Image (cartoon, rainbow, N blue to C red; front, side, top):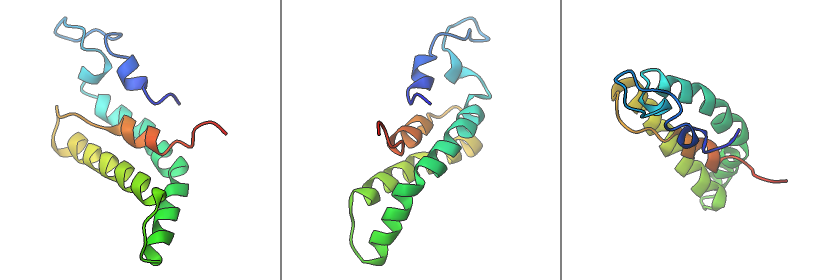
Length: 104
C-alpha cells in the first residue's frame, strides 16, 4: 500500500460544497483511513512493537522503540481525532508508512 495515498488523492473527489478538497474532506474519510491503516500498523509494525517491548524489558531503547513510539502516538491520536474530534487532522498515513518495512 503506498503510504502517500491520502495526500495523492487530494483534489480527486469533489467536495459536496463544490470546492475540491478531495478525499480528506469527506465525512467518512477518517473511518476509511482507520480501516486501511490498522492492518499496516498492526501487522507490519509488529516487528517494531515486539522489538520495543524486548528493549523495554532490558531497560534500554533502540530504533524499534523510536519507530514503535512514533507510530503508536500517530495512530492513537488519529483514532481519538476520528472518534471524538471530527474535522481535526489525522496522521494514519504516518502510522502506516513508518512501520512499513520497505524494500527487502
